[in-house]
Length: 425
Image (cartoon, rainbow, N blue to C red; front, side, top):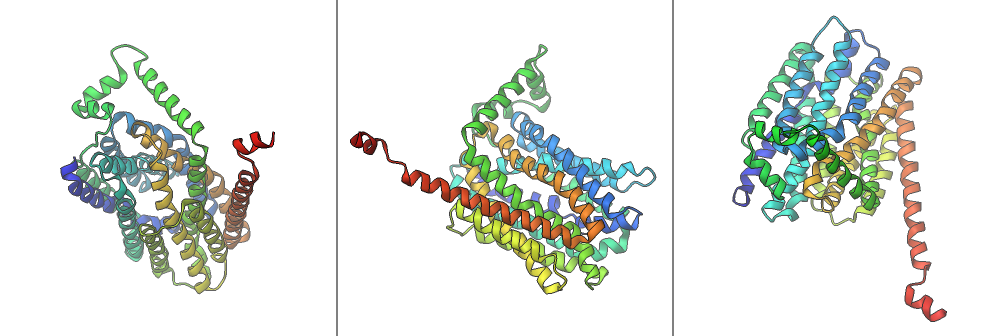
């Protein structure tokens, strides 16, 4: 692997393009409204997706650790194809929710797995110090790809939802083909043994020749993961902070479409501001690759900056709306890279995908609560009320987190050390 690390990272860059180029993300709410769904139903569909994500996030991370990261990412592409097919169906309204469930499952299979694959590939090659630069590059590639897809929203509206979801299916299939060329990293003995096995043999290895072997293997994996979580509370705090900063960003893109149209932006060109906002996140990820800011300071600054930006998104002036949304996206892109590097340095390779998946699970937990609530507020009082609520909660939470850090620091400084206590006694 160490002689092919450039080829490996190059393939991962290429795989990110079709995984991220989703034209439908910029206009899916508009598509639902045009098909007769209400804004509240769109929020419910989003809630279904994140409920599924919350349930499946940790199991899919375990699947990646036990069955292989490459195989799991291939399954992610297949699930994305299923999502596009179900979202394009008419008749029974429940197909939309089935499609959202497959969309969540696809994201679950990708999240955690992708970071683990990147980090362990670099770790095997002895270049783990390059992780921030490589992961930042992949993140920027994905964000630019998503931004370019948003710029294609007029095309998506013109061709209709059926053809747009058809393009999504084709892109997911191309991602599956690209993943076939990616190598599975082997850092630990378990990973080396898994690579030698054929997928069918590995499944037999997982299930075992007698009942209960798979259950025992999963139980051991869960126990090791729980021990790590309990032993590293600061790592879990960073993961929660990253999820809290990211939560308003997706909802901004989700509800901003209607808000901008109500403020006078042409509906046919709704992809332009979404493109600008998405690029702000790419800039944040790119700046993070060269930043020397500490992780605690980064979380505090990004939390406040993102909270204020989310509140500004609820304004009526288009310039203020765009500035606030860009501020929130920049903060999320910046903090995401630094948090990812920080936590991966503490994770173990055999549990890496599972532990990284906790970040996405935290995000889903927050979104399960935030999505229907903001959808209700948007329908009842206007989407600006949703932005004010999200921004206020994030800003207040960041201030409380900062006060807690200051209080703990002062308590440690005031506490006499062991030698000083013995001398006073």
